[in-house]
Image 1 (cartoon, rainbow, N blue to C red):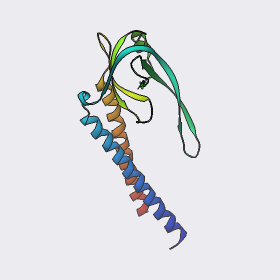
Image 2 (image 1 turned 90 degrees about the vertical axis):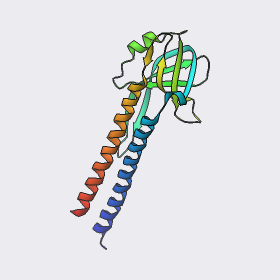
Image 3 (image 1 turned 45 degrees about the vertical axis):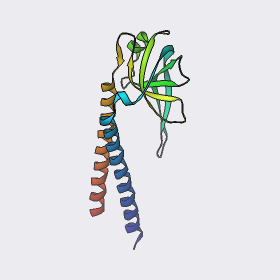
Image 4 (image 1 turned 120 degrees about the vertical axis):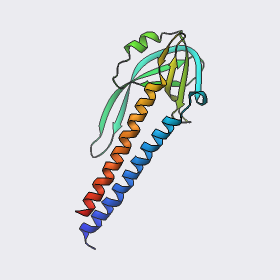
Length: 166
């Protein structure tokens, strides 16, 4: 075997692995999103100690590292040491922060991000008299992410097969 054939084979195996991983992650995201029932997930009721928009710096690595500064809403309740986070695609939290004043009683439906961390992802947020964040808006974001992952996985799979044939 020559070097070109070996490189082509390694690339093909790697790209097939990555495409299968993307397809699996997209499918599992869609499955979890579809089967989630708010009655069976974590809930926390409490009084808001503070609700503020914080900057979170995330890093996308590759040949060069790219940093993103994202605005995320952070809510802290008096009944727990855990923090609750909500991400909004358009990065506009003015309306929500105006309604989430200190001393407001809220009910938070959340998904634990990690057992060891004290950060949770808000699925639904209900104030004393209105729904501030709906579960449907969260589901639509997750659905979009799952579909994109699956499409990228299939595209990578097709490109890999196409490059192997040429």
